[in-house]
Length: 419
Image (tube, rainbow, N blue to C red; front, side, top):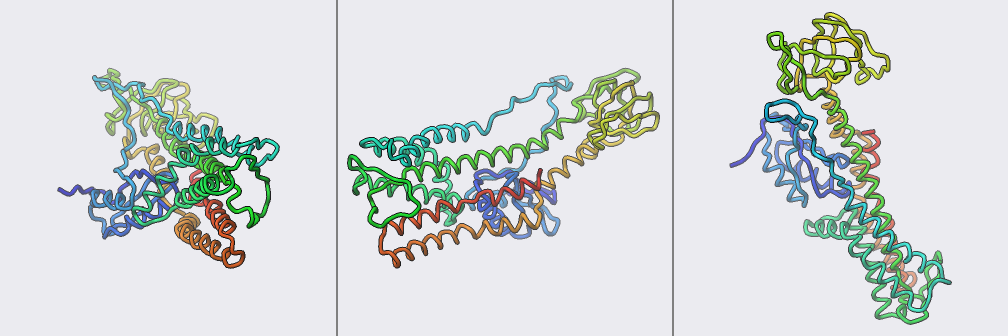
């Protein structure tokens, strides 16, 4: 049985994206579904889908389209409800936040610790003791395999779907440098005792398989991991901005029932309900003051540091704070109709929308990867024709791959817009 969503707009939470090319691929796959228009935002990891004719959306077909592209999707959950106890009263209990960056941070720290001695040994000839290259191989191997595994995994996933992303560039570059080093160590002369390397700007054809590139494979992995970690922190900050806005709302309200105050969750409030707000409490929802006078901290809306005086018939907004006197407020708008909820929707729209400059960045990143592969191949052929040395040609081709990984191209613009 096909599941449909009657709402004209639908948000999907996406998993598995690692760069802007991934977002472009998902967006193209979704837009192939008949009758819909979709936009994918890499910074928020969400897709916004709209029915062109205003009809229902086939959720299963949309999720299947994302999965065909090699990624995961699920319907975005609504904002978290206020936790309540068994009798319906609000509670301060909340799930403990999890550090979703911990695995990436651990991978980065371990990889960096292993890479530093490899770099020092490779670039400082006086420290290159006899058979130092085998120690470098021992230290660099976990970095090139385990440290770079997220890139290898994403590249393999893309290969299964006949696509290439930024991760493909990273994986191919790191793998090529590492495999070439293995060849030089086991089949060339780089594994001989007394082998040394010197820091130089240009390679020489006669050196060929006499040198290794383990420091390249390890250092590129660490620098890209650092970039991914900074990207993840930026995206988490963007998500936390909306969460912080939603937490400004009150959890419960003291509603007057036949002259008696009854604590109820904010979600149970109805228009025309009257509730009491004491000094220091947050106003539960939008309404009009029907009793008392006070001052209200309205900096949530206006940014003013000085509280605003309110009296009989004054309009107050949910999420603002009663500073001084006791007031009774008659609810006028509740739930999704409140000013705070509308502000949250505006933030969501800002996250899912795309400016023209962002669309330009997405288009560039979408064609960037195949262009880099073509340039790398041309570099290989060009050096072979000009120099005839496979070692120098291979080194130049690998260098073209490993320097062309500007994942920030897809994240810098949306992050700047969100901030």
